[in-house]
Amino acid sequence: MRVVIGIAMIALVGTLAYKKGLQPLAWLLAAGPIGFIVLFFLPSAKEEGLDRAARASRVRLGNTVGWVMSGLVVLGSIVLFAVR
Image (tube, rainbow, N blue to C red):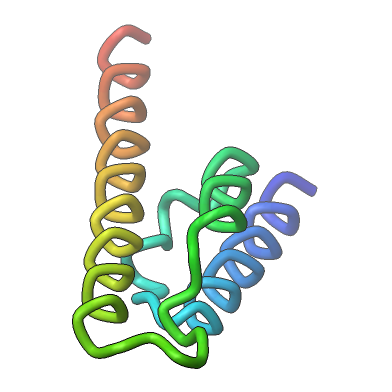
């Protein structure tokens, strides 16, 4: 059951990232509930009326947050496995 929920969260977060104009790969490992909430509140890079600089800034912010959260998940997993 955990695997099914995990796959569903990955699909949900990846789809939301794509619809906001972000890299789904950056959000792949940050697909837990916290990652979903953070991504949900990030501004969309596909919003109409944005100039090129604002769009690029939103993409950079969203992808950076995704990569950092994914990195923290990997680091936390390594620490948990090392402790056990």
